[in-house]
Length: 202
View 1: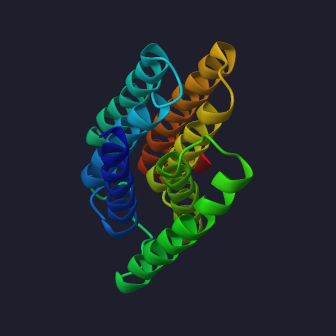
View 2: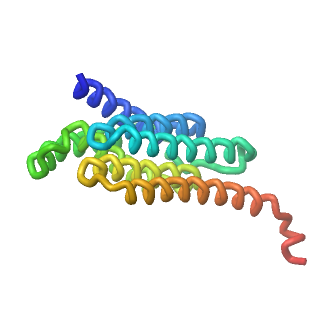
View 3: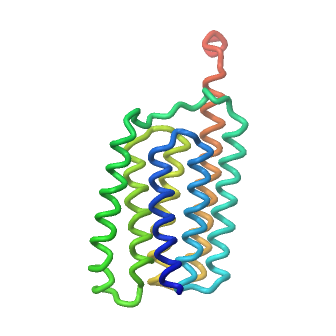
């Protein structure tokens, strides 16, 4: 039963990653990021105690809340998106990532038995999606979401290999740091756009 749920979670990861790549609405992007943290919670608890998974989930949702409240306070035109108009290309990228993840996961499982195919596949999907997103955008919010997606994938695979409370706390602080840095950059970008050029020269 747990394996079935884990594979459903992998599908959720695939869909949420595709939504972040394709969608232009920041609300959908942050909602998909929240789903990724929920998926990470399940996959992490396959190898780690429930408390460790809960720390990752609560930390992730705190990051999503900070980014969402910050973005909500900005004008709709304050941040532009650089996602290609043609959604076929991001969709094709998602399919490529899926093929690679599902193809490489059995090889990793054979080399490192015990990790579990759903855990490896989910982690690889998130790492690949994060890298692809970074290559497609220069938008501040999208870049932060991409880095967080990449970090979530790393955390899932690392949690299956190593059980360390210290590293868990360190990764949680990195997530929070990225969220706060993203919020600061969003606010700094709005401030720079609001500066009057004449006032800047005086």
